[in-house]
Amino acid sequence: MGIARTVTEVIIVSKMSRVGVICCVILLFVAGQIMAAPALRFLLESDAVYELKLSFPNRIDKTPPILSIYTINEQGSFLNLARLYRGLAFDGITEMNVVFEAPEGYTRAEVVITGETDFDQSSLSFARLDRFDPGRSSELASLIVNEEVYTGLVIDARGLGLERGMSPRIWSESGEMIYGGVAAPYDYVQNTGVICYGTQLSEELMKRVSIPGKLTYSAPLVVKAQAVKGQPKTGVVIDQETADLIIAAIRNYDFFAHYAVVFLVD
Figure 1 (cartoon, one colour):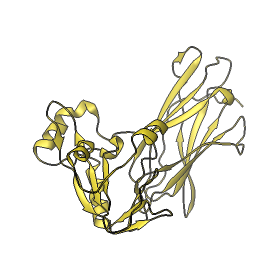
Figure 2: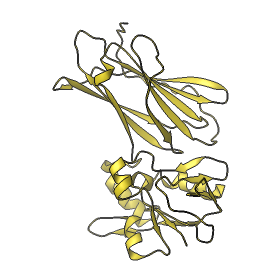
Figure 3: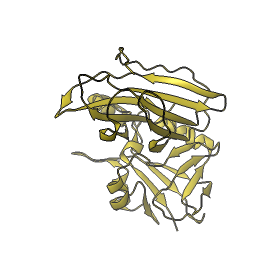
């Protein structure tokens, strides 16, 4: 199936009031028509921004692939369309990047690839983007001076029976997943963990929720968990006011992108 237009275009068709954004993204590799062959699935955290990277064999005689994102809520499916440029090829492989923001009010999404490329030799990966652009470092310094930056999150869950785990989650009272470290590389999850645990906020734990540099800056947001969640009980629930505060805070400095999170446990 030939598709002539290769312009990059992102269309967000609808925005709704914020409810839980617990998204599952399903990649379906297709050739000519959609086929039921999921290759990548992951959860999206609330108010997070992700970068999707697609690598595929570069063939001049083939139509470059088109990546389409469908966001889904209780009312149905809505198209967010990202059309890819052919891009630059290295050793016969082209890499394309698409930035995807978890839309407000949607519960899941489907990522669909169409075109004439060889999907057996293609790959799609994703990572959470730091909302703060490193190019704005002077602005970050100004925010730090004016104490408008939280460098990490500390949740006190002592006395609630929280269990340690590989896939901890932070939930709001309304049911949205605030954080889960879902974009962390496997090696990082295994060797470091998307959350640090401790019985009290020690000097070592403070390093996790600080911004390193010539002068280390530490100003974590410390909150109390309301309850635990999950089987096993590795997730925490925080009140809605606190959840809203965290959502606002990561727009100044996205400490979740740096996995700067600590759980205090018994």
